[in-house]
Length: 201
Image 1 (cartoon, rainbow, N blue to C red):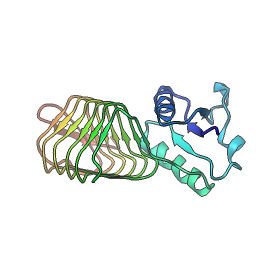
Image 2 (tube, helix red, strand yellow):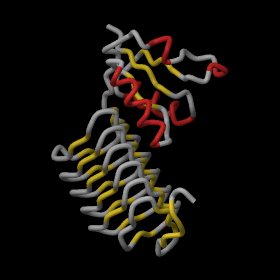
Image 3 (cartoon, one colour):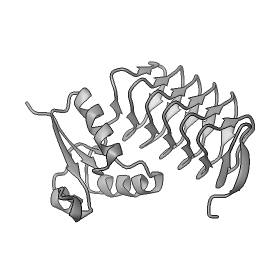
């Protein structure tokens, strides 16, 4: 019997999510995109297909959250997608809609919220807490007991030392080394990582 899933967002990120879905055993992968110029089905075309599986090919945290709300209200199912090459502790907890990309490590008692992106080869160490709609970029390393607030984006190749808190709706720039807490709604980058402004600037 065919196992089907929709990928909401026909972007480059969506292509990667589609590959992960296939690696998870979905043999019928259909892209959905509300940009009619791309030539794919729109959500309006499929919205009556309640109880179908749908995953998100959207890297932007705020947009992903809006789409998640819409598809859940329409009765769709949002499975967790975990690439088989990833190493996931059995004591960790991962919530619905999250996508775990190739070669990710999630260690003991880490918790991953709804619709989180753990991008290729990132490491989430023991007892980390990643809130809903966070994007952890490729090759990021979070040491033990790091907390990341909802909607925050951690840039590619960044490292965060143990027991720190990164606030919600913040952005950590690529290649940063974070050695102190970062508050909510902040832009920060560098080695050592420093706040450079508010997120609305």
